[in-house]
Image (cartoon, rainbow, N blue to C red):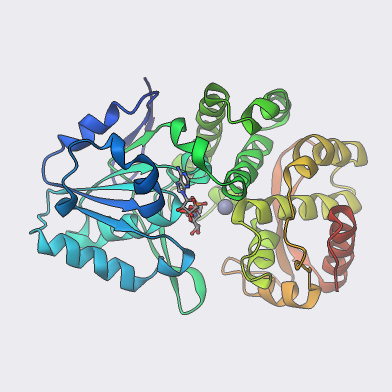
Amino acid sequence: MQIMTVSSAIRDYQVVFAETMDFISELETTKDHYYVIDKKVWDLYGSSFKSLNTDLALILPISEEVKCLETVKTVYDALMKCSAKRNMTLISIGGGIIQDITGFVASTLYRGINWIYVPTTLLAQADSCIGSKTSLNYQGYKNLIGTFFPPTKVFINTAFLSTLESEDFYSGLGEVIKLYMIGGESSATAFIKEIDKIKERDRSALAKAIQEVLQIKLQYIQEDEFDTGRRNLLNFGHCLGHAVESTTNFLIPHGQAVLMGILFANIVAKNRGLLSKSRYEFLSRELILGNICVQHTSVLFNTDQIFEAMKKDKKRVGEGLALIMMLDDYSLKKFQDLQYDELAAGMKELGATLRVPTR
Ligand SMILES: NC(=O)c1ccc[n+]([C@@H]2O[C@H](COP(=O)([O-])OP(=O)(O)OC[C@H]3O[C@@H](n4cnc5c(N)ncnc54)[C@H](O)[C@@H]3O)[C@@H](O)[C@H]2O)c1
Ligand SMILES: [Zn+2]
């Protein structure tokens, strides 16, 4: 069993890479615990929890709509009903949505209770489970409300990933690719050799990749836990990605929108002469294009809507739109000067490359 320690201003915590389901016995013997579990995960893996007392568990059907204050209240009520105490432990099992809801509950109940998190999607295992962010959607705005609160412990077992729908797997893969690119030339080229095994969901290839990308992410979050500087570069691909998600009514899963955002940023960087044509083509061919699956025939890139959505970027400070670009040496730089015409030209090239209509 491998262990990674993450330091945080609130508390340091361990990420345990578990090869079997034996870690469940540690969960079941945790004093004063209460479970919140994604219903789909419970239906698939409930039989592994032999001594789970269902009176001490809330099984939640998951969708982006339930990532809201009403569900937080449902969890508070369930905890109060079984006399929640400050030293209790909330154990949550599921993907990024379960993480965001329960992380918010754990950070606010008694101003912070113990919280063990078992991520069950690729996105949550390879990205969101470290970094201390909790988020809720509010009045149609995604992730508007939130806190910084780390878990007490994280258990990662790649066995969960075998049952993910392809769409959810490829969403997580988008974030994995982003982190390998941020890791630089040697990390990106090493990953290219592994990518087929990862897509076959080979458990050891997945475990290795997850450990490697969490190490890359760690370098950014430990230096800037509260996201006031360098950590913002982890938003590579997200400037356009968020706009693509919202303007297509979330038809495109998050990590896939991020990959499209990376391709767009690389197009602009190439056209500005910041990224050589050969590097652009190498990254597109080896890492990006084969891993974007646009399944929805109804997807259309509407440049005007994307422009409006990017203007609302909560971290935008300059005159133009913000865009994080990769330079030829794989370093990242945030620009604040993207104007409408350059966006429109980039969108046209993106649409032609992905064979998605643009307007
Ligand atoms: N807090 C953060 O730092 C952070 C970072 C990135 C994303 N997020 C948030 O995470 C959410 C997306 O996370 P996600 O992609 O994990 O989505 P998710 O939690 O919605 O899970 C995706 C789907 O997979 C199902 N599922 C979960 N585990 C499964 C398993 N083992 N087998 C089969 N199906 C399974 C879920 O029921 C759901 O239908 C978004 O709301 C996003 O905003 C948070
Ligand atoms: Zn993301």
